[in-house]
Image (tube, rainbow, N blue to C red; front, top):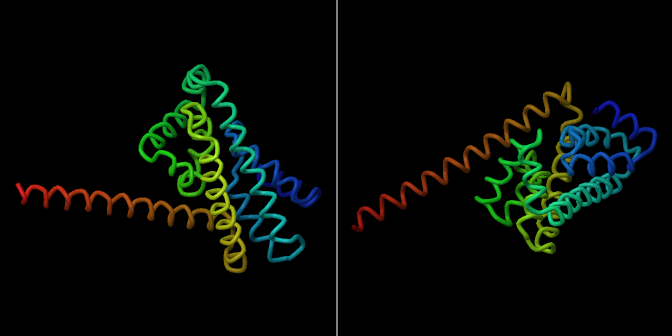
Length: 202
């Protein structure tokens, strides 16, 4: 998949990235979008294409993919939710549902880059639950911009020192996983301290 996208990128330019990001954000086609961004980031060192053109093509494709999911969710409603729950995407849809219940609207922003696997399925879910379109669009666009700019920059910055894109992906995934674990641990510590203080007052 990645080799195909990169070949098309070399032949047809940034339009290929637009299509790849759109397809990936719909969740219908399993496109390794994060790895594509990292790989394209390493290619920006050659300066054969303007980074701003790459960024805008990726961003517009990702936002349009988000809008597609939101619109389908809004139009389909409960019937579409039942279809997703029973389909091969059911497990990921359940994860998106639990994530949405916990984080609400701000979760759309974080799902674009911090927990990106649930992002495409969250689009359908928030469309079904009636999250206002403008709020969704703002959160989606800001999150996608962070995700795309961040991973293109990481690929660009590490292009001279990595031996393979797989090692970079592993390191980035480890960092993000560590960050999430740290935030989770810190929230539990704060909750425990709050309960301890409340108990002392009683």
